Length: 175
Image (cartoon, rainbow, N blue to C red; front, top):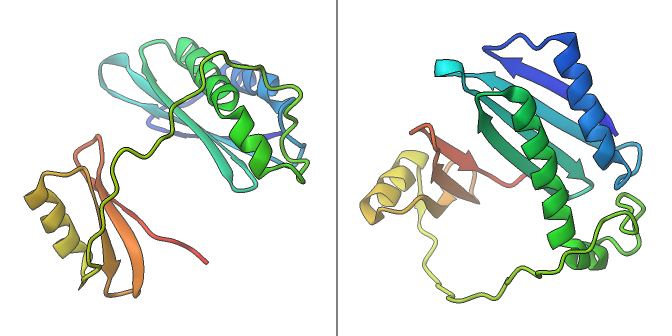
């Protein structure tokens, strides 16, 4: 597994980079060698750092983030979260990747508790073409955290969402 480390408002030491690579090496046994892990370190206020890790395994994305005062503890929690995700969804992932060699499922530990994935409620709605600003307004009027809409600029389905930092995000498909 290749590890790419980026940072914002923090200058990671060589020791920190080595620790991140060493910890992620524990997860590399689950993947083929050409898988890439992206780790982002963000320095914050009051000595808090944010660590984000994303592993894109040929269409299946594993992602974890952690806020911590001790960055090394945060890295340990990230590794635990990623391992837990792999264990909880092992059976579903095996079905999806049965003919692929990107993930080695024999190495993924079993989990005793299977997550509940039953759809509780289904909702349909009309897709009205609108701008991003109109979609954000609709989301706020509905007091929702996200809003699905037909983006009139791209003529495709998109999602606006409220970010933890108070800003907004936009999700659009790429073909």
